Length: 104
Image 1 (cartoon, helix red, strand yellow):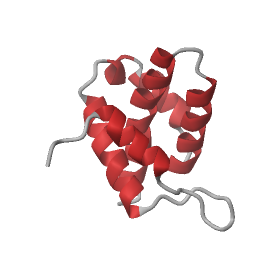
Image 2: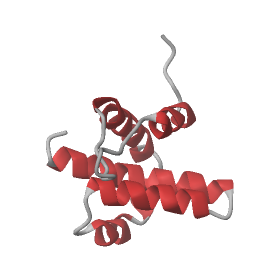
Image 3: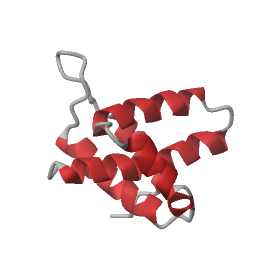
Image 4: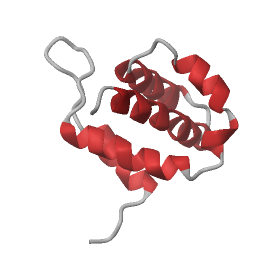
C-alpha cells in the first residue's frame, strides 16, 4: 500500500465524525490515528518549530477538542491556501500532544 501524503490524511481526518450526541468533540479511534500520523509529518516541518513557545502559550488550558474546533474555524477563515495549510501544520501537533497526555 502506498503511503498517504499530508493532504490525503487531512482530507480523511476531516471526513471522520467527531461529534457525540451532545455536540461535543469526541474523536474516533480512526481520527486519533490520523492525528498521530499527520502530526508526525508536521513535526518534520520547520514551521512546527518556529512558533513553538507561542503555540504552547495558546494551547495552555485548552483540550484537544478545543484546539481542533479552533483549527477548523481558522482553516475556514484563512485568507489563502498557505494560511489554511499552515494552520493545520501548527495545530495538529498540539492536538496530538493533548491526546497523548490522555493516553489516546
